[in-house]
Amino acid sequence: MSESKGQIATRTYHSNPVAPVPQVLGSAVPKSIDDVAAALRQKIGADSVVLVEKEHVGTPYVVVSPSHIVEILKFLRDDERFYCSNLNVVSAVDYPPRAEGTESLLKASNVIEVVYVVQSYVHRHHVMVKVRLDRSAPKVASVTGLFRAANWYERECFDMLGVHFEGHPNHKRILLPPDWVGHPLRKDYEFPEEYNGMKVPL
Image (cartoon, rainbow, N blue to C red; front, side):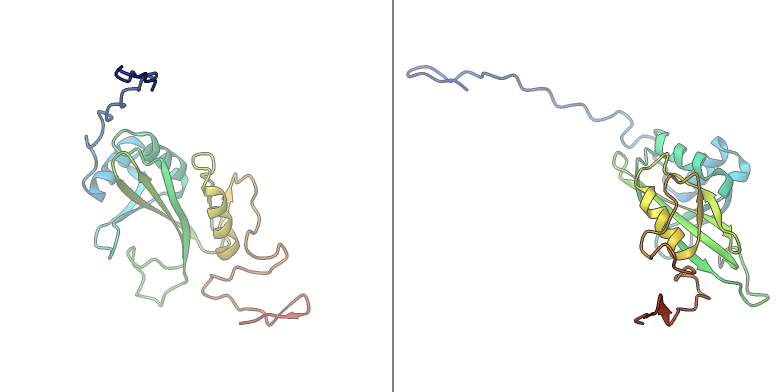
């Protein structure tokens, strides 16, 4: 501002108007995990959703076909009903073989389950998506082309559980040395007593 004696101060700048709130805010936002599953089946295909889990303690989720994971996360990122532009996490859990008669879709058996959580700042919601991979050779497409944050998340899943993310630009260990044997978060992992002649602290 500039001001001289006896005069009212005048503005020397022009403020920009506040951007309007997006018209899509709150419109057609999915109200349940069923709505998420229905949108995925309609857009990607009926075989894209394997399971809808609503009774899970915490966040309801969908289990989807690993072959569709890139399409699914791209859809959740770009579709105006979702706008999940932020990848919160990629994680994984080992479910070793269960005793005969105890397997079920809700209690996964003999799989590595990879978990993706995406979030929308526009709609203020998040969606949890899971894929279940063959435990003997767990592999799924990398989503680093959609979310740069996936790079280190996927490397950690590889390092700790042995999940191979096809198409990852730097697919190598991130926490353990390159010559470490095995993946420590596997339920059947046996920790070595020594590493390169040094005792491993447990």
